[in-house]
Length: 496
Image (cartoon, rainbow, N blue to C red; front, side, top):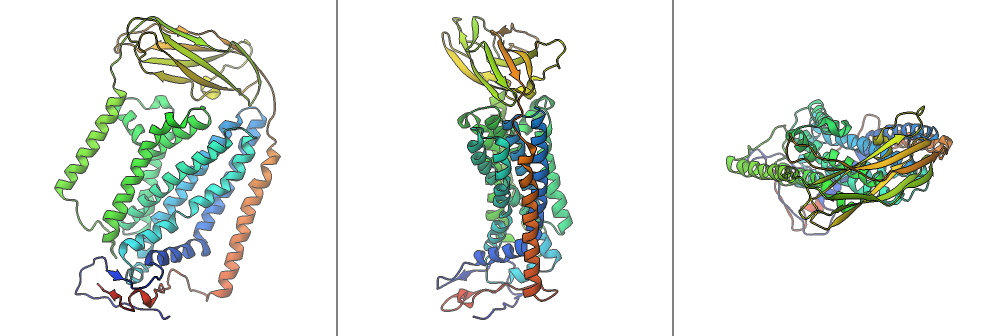
């Protein structure tokens, strides 16, 4: 079967060519997908980024294990930090590859040859998209050994692996699609890469800020709409805070909405209008723009209404605790429950429950409750008369010593100038004994072996490439072999 060359016609505008196939040959998007996979992996760009990723993961995991030997980080916290780092770097790889998908082809003067093949423009975008997200599954698989070793058999391991894969598989295609959109409308690869990474860093910054840094309605609203912040909170509260998936699902809504928006714009609007040059080909009509702005406005007002409920004041509240003492080792966890009851005849106001920890040893270090329990504050909706609600808490034993844990119940004040009377629970006397759980040498074979294995794999690919491919040739400069069956045997082909 011979290759087919299609001549460029100046009588038709740049539009999506129509291809009808009378047989069951491979679809055009699959051929584009194979070409892109060959360029990304055989020619080393994706593999190079994955090697750097494995080196980063090995170094960070070894540092976490060393810190745990000093009783600084519990296993659950290390699992979350490892998964968070894997997703953060994995999304960076997705952005770099997606940003090069079209603007890089323009700079290398290979996009025109791709568009002249008998493939629909949307099929070209789909093939490139599928190839661009291929590094994420590899990155997730590489992270599994590190997470397993650092978890030290903790029961959270399976939940952490499953939901980190789900969250990463939601964000990686979304950010890959975003970078492809920027690349599709950029004239140079430098512009596409700079724009994509700038937006990524802007979305990543709120994740690094403490929760108290975002003040004001606008800052809280931006934090709620940030898909990276929602995903980070979801994983942290699920893995470290011992919260349920049903309770945390609203945190993923921003990520789901972001992914759906990117997919609709990329595949329904931008893909059929793929051009040889950069730029948005058709401006959005005023009517469509008004509809989009109206939807966004309704969404913002809805999110604001959720946070802007009126505050009331009430009395007759009681908080009880199911444990008064506990003994543990560093790196373990202490679980307990509190129950809040409304004995008043009226509905209670919204309630806040906060965990506090003090060191009973006057010569000991001051305790930071945030290090011992990231979920040290819970919020309860107003309680009707006679009703109660139970909360679950987890205390991560960081340092050895003698401590007292107590809970504070705070009724929300009625306005900005009002106050309320906090209530305290019975204290939990916690004695923590020193215990080293992880030997950093256990993670060392993975930290060293995986990067070496990937480097050897890359060296083998380079040797095969030099042996089988002529010098100076590259799949980037090779035209795609589209079977004639796509437009022979009764089929049709239209040029543009």
